[in-house]
Image (cartoon, rainbow over all chains, first blue to last red):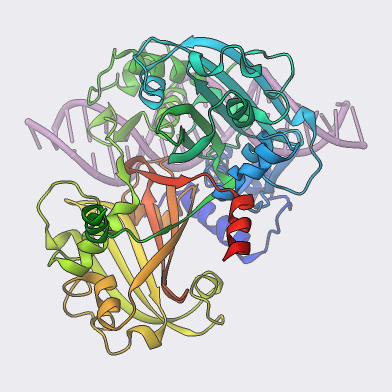
Length: 266
Length: 266
DNA sequence: TAGTGGTCTAGACCACTTC
DNA sequence: AAGTGGTCTAGACCACTAA
């Protein structure tokens, strides 16, 4: 038999899915349910904590427990890297890192710090340098309005960025044109990319920084950017609030037999 | 000031990261810490629950609380769909759905059911049919040994699969060659695909089915498969235990300016 | 100031695992 | 049977929010 708090939580969850409690509506207060014989305060509290961990509600002290509205996922396709966005126009490239939301650009929506750091294992592997090598780290916290949505930290090899605007933190978000424009002006035009992503539970630091609701996972994205000759010019790591993003990729079905044949005839 | 249980949890988490408690090692028992003055049983228990939710430990009754070993992520690249795997060889295609783990194929590692169902909103949109249309659903639960790793449910339009082995559940996993081979034999060779993925907290059903540890997120994958003329021949939804998989995609940086020029000259 | 959720205690009892 | 984590109670008190 399921525990008492589980049964209560399931019952309330069912009511939420039925629409008995609409998004934004307030759930019965803990003390009410105690009064109603649902158990002791600790038991009802445990049920509410479970609902919170499942992403259905959020509790705030002094306010109550309300049904969480589900926000639409921002769909991230590869068109966000379109060269016209950072090469041809005046649009600053980090809008590509941000979601095209149709809202006006607001300089306050991104903060940035640039540091010279020693490469740890992950960075070294991503950037193709020895562990401990000096690299430049450009860290951004991206917000939608006042709400943080993700962090994005780009790592660069010193020889690619020293002397450019990237290592000069004063002009704000990598200056006009963003990081890819700066690399382009320095003679490194980006050509192809690799993205790897996986989901996990956030660390305590990430919960605080991204203001994550209890139980919300994060998606960690590793992006490697190459020039046409295969040189890695940027390795970036993003931590995304899971409830805000979806990633989309289109590709052809591989056919290694055909590819091999092509190689032979070339 | 942080609550007592948070401080205890942070302290233990730090010791785990330091290696004071190795993976597989047992943490002090709850009653021991109560004895040691860390608080009441409920307080220590709450701290241990937090560590469990953060993915650091697993608790089992009668056994104790042990540090969870971190398993390596299986990297899923698009080569798992290589045509040679299902077109040219005798290899059954669902190995492509599974992870290339170097282990021998074991027929027990996948169970399958086939049903004719009415398309809900998601299926209808994915398959490009009206809501409520009859479609075929082929549901698999994929395991690695005895441990479930993900579910995968493929939806097909009736006119594509009726009369094929796909709708006949007896021969096991879609018969020799798998679903793509069956479609190929029926005149529908798959050509390109779209994958969309996002992370979320699992439902109670998914926790049970995939035997997920407390707090582990899932990644939901929506895969749409097309023939060369753009017909959707399969829409599949997978639910993956987040701690077991990473996805990798490689692509060229888009250049809509160049693409437009090409179109004009064609 | 009143109202809300969050923490904590002390102890009883339950459920599962191992011996 | 012994040992482990899990549930539950009754009540006190704390921390934050809103009027």
